[in-house]
Image 1: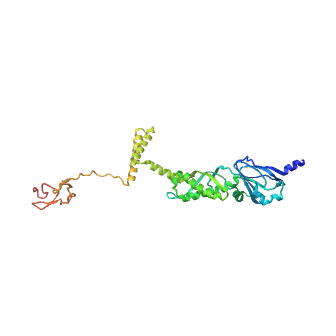
Image 2: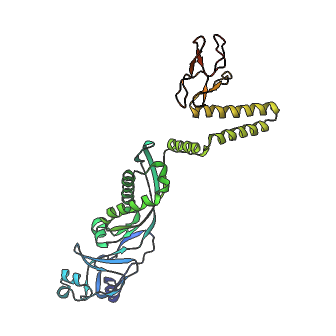
Image 3: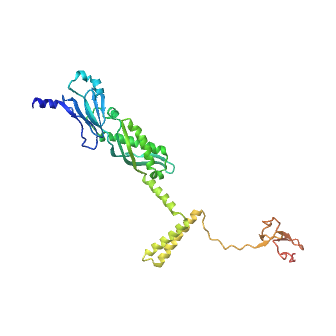
Length: 351
């Protein structure tokens, strides 16, 4: 290798990073061995990237997307830290980190353990949930300090487990505080998601990250609770009890008709069964037991002599005017109830 090739290999003229993966968050530019960056070298920061220069463990200059010529004019902090103007004439050595600022979408979250929730209808419930979220680096300097440090390479997988824990914890807090009935949870996914996203954002910001989207795909209830909800739905669907009894009777007729061996006898039995079930349910709903009674004897009504109102012949006073319905026989003094024409004791005609 000639002297020119040696010098060319020692001094870096272009600093850049092309991301060929989908999950790289941080990439440290490979300055190997005694390599140093040449003065006026070109720095290329592509869209959705940020470049951070670190000199002797201190964060120096930060560059947004664009093309830069590295010198004392474009590197003010670096120049101050290293006194580059006097110590370095043609080259300098520093660490360069490229931060991927794009959104990392479709990150899945799910509950490893059930979320405990207190419900007014069903008591303590164990919920499981899952969904997706998207996040990105918002503050690259904070992210460098708090998360990846001096790592040469950092991916989504290395931070995702911790982020998912923060997501699940935030969703658990929101569900516990919201007090939404379990039966209404499916109608509140968007509302719960918005509140949870705000809570998650607070936790992500500590690491220089932001959450740009959060979706709850499902919150599943225990099987026993789902069965109870189904039964409640069925009861609500019954509606009018009379209509339900008619439906039961029609179902019995249909089943009997399908029974080839039963014939009309089977149909009659099916109808009887259907009507019997309906009558039993009607009795239970009314809270009374139906019994067979003798035919009632019609009541005899008489008119009050004072107001003419019809009154039971056994009544002692008129229900309308309050006049006494008990009279005395003029001949024998026997009590007369109602308005008889003859005294039942002596047979004398009454006026």
